[in-house]
Length: 85
Image (tube, rainbow, N blue to C red):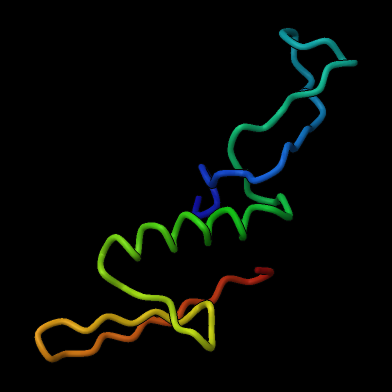
């Protein structure tokens, strides 16, 4: 569920599910990322970066998965790894 609801930067289409509501020749445009899309890790990471910056973390200059925060003389370091990013 980590990859659900990520914002897609490009248009992505998929075949409509086989159901009585859809005709076989129809396609669907995705509004949000789904698990299994090549774009899902990037969409999730973009949403994560936005959220973590709201908590006062700054992105490291040498590594885009490194975040740090200085608060009341203490340093918090966070590194994140997402496969296929």
